Length: 281
Image 1 (cartoon, rainbow, N blue to C red):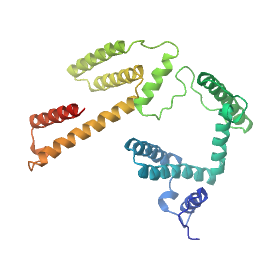
Image 2: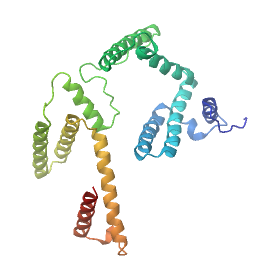
Image 3: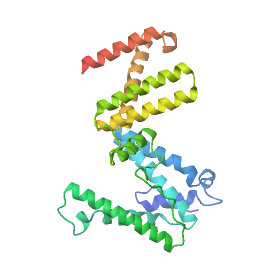
């Protein structure tokens, strides 16, 4: 096989992926993969891109974007092998879509307001959907199983908090919603009371169900105040990590670890860290 070298061109990445998937000379791990087995890595790489952005690490972002691009090339290569489509078809599909969905940039629909752009966007998406149905019929493919109703089309693979946010946002379009964040707080109190009741009963399934209900309502509260629940939880995670690390650092100066400290000692250190952070502003 011809030696391959790092390249700044997409063709170089495509050639490397093809080499990895070549039977007999390729990588055994890459060769045994399929769409389903690669999909979790695709999701993971997207999260790692988001993480690099959140940390403001542009050097890491460059690497993570490369890892995410590899996922696209990997899926395209597998599709090419089975004769479904190839990487150029992926590029053509997205460039076609971008041009079609932006007639106010690439076409004659100029000087539109943001509201008019949104209306136009939804009309074009509806036209695309109809065209896709017709294309499947023309190709002799079975129709896709289609969900119906207001909640249809919210991807099941989204993180649960984000999906809860989107489901409730959809329901709100037909008026099924609270109109005041304080009413959602009342519902949260109701859900915590139900958790308390489930805990008292010792029913594990009921406890899990009530915790799910609580998280679902908390996602709604985040939406009511225009906050991203995933972002809120990510910030809380980071705060917990920071404060717990401060506890460990304080104990380390005494030659101890968290395992050596009592809960009361760690709680006192936690409160000290919390107070210090608040005074620092």
